[in-house]
Image (tube, rainbow, N blue to C red):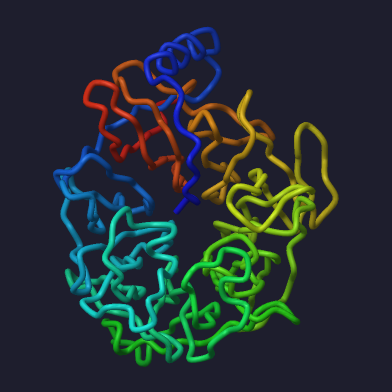
Length: 413
């Protein structure tokens, strides 16, 4: 899930006109046929967050009151995945499971005993009344809560074909660094977690065991954001602060077999350093602050990055192994976020303040709207995931209804 920024969108109609003109003189580029997945919950906002190989797209759709439900689009239809007893649920990160397992975040019926806001309200849900949030696993039509490390809240981000689930969860420690910069209500410490099944036939959340992934040496808190099929995990490490970005994301790390094996180099900033996805080659994308930043959202100056242990082309030049490439922004923009990468090293994300989706490949970032074939009025505002067939999902603006809808963009040549 992209970090929410109050930066606004540019004119939808002007953007569409630009996109149709831009591709016309460049027949060598891949074009995309865009499918409007609509707002099946009946509200005004939906999002495609994850699209795996069998043709499922998972994300969320809002109801008329702006609560949201995790949503699954498949076989030409859509259905709600339900909740854990509260009003809200969502698939907030790309999943990487091809066997019918989906993970995300959902509210329970229980109210927050410590009055915490937690990551679900700060980064995902539009409205809420202060309920406990837990990571969920959904399989065979049943949503189940994943256990925490003893605290109240959890958050599940990714799952691979081994059934390993990653995210973060609270323990019982009252962390003195909570709210240090954000001054919010976060109280309990939280750590990166990998949930593993107890038994080959375990299906529901009660049969998953949390394994704590230690933060970077010297740090107190952490969160895992993505996992690949090899079991490599990436995430953030820092202090408690507000349980989202900022000072919680001082370091970018990679875990293997439950321990930190590598600190990923940043773009020079002290905060908001967040890997969002890792492919099966171990290449990582996300967003990272530049020098001169600060821990609050208003001080963030992050840009999309691509990191690889191998040498690769970055902005027209070959990089040394283990380098982090600043992908920059779309023309005229200030900040950007890379949100997903496939095994072909195609990267998708969003650039602000234009609020346009981008595709980065072969060392170049392109406005995804410039690659849209005729037949849609949608303006693609962020790209959340791309699978190995090059199919992209995310959010788009429909200028005919003013709704924000989930979309699927399929390469046609």
